[in-house]
Length: 295
Image (cartoon, rainbow, N blue to C red; front, side, top):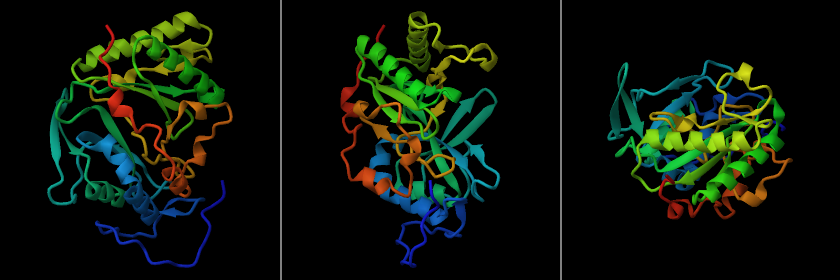
């Protein structure tokens, strides 16, 4: 991946939120600035909005860029646009006031705070204990993308067998995410139990290849099927979120036909994503495919 090419200065796009220090480089080596990040989220927001609307957000912030300190933040930061919805959630250790997504000004204000990636709950803010999808995080580790692709296809087959409609996307990192939309109703604990059951079924079919062992030392080089994203208050990056990684990769919805061992998630990044947006959205029918959680 080459650095962002230098071009003649062009007028900055007018955004509905002021971007302070717009020329601050967030992705060294690639040259992408805070303005580039904000303009990306402005451009992609029509596709992003269905995934953040009425969702509680956790923020992955790098105010000085990847070379500075990056951190996760659940508590809503000060300085958000007036009227930004905030929702308190009680946890074991107290109350956290989460930002609720869905408004472009909110998204751009977060980008101005150096929030590169957003992480969302699997349930809406209006019904936080009732997920409307089940998801699997497939991180191949050192095994590489071919391993993640095989795992995604296996998860797809099991979900198909159980009457759900699976969708796949790049995580924006080394792996893949498989989602299946659900009709709202079951509690998060029920969805988590179902996800664990799917993982266990795959382990029983191919014990030499898959594991649900949480301890890395016990995995023995097998691919970990992570169902924990389905637990209450756990999060996952939505489609179209930038990731805190070199080259500014974007978590990108895929058609199943696009999966292959040569798939390179870094080829989807903020520098070239306009080409992807010009194509049909492979997840456009996601919400029409909701199914009841299998018993």
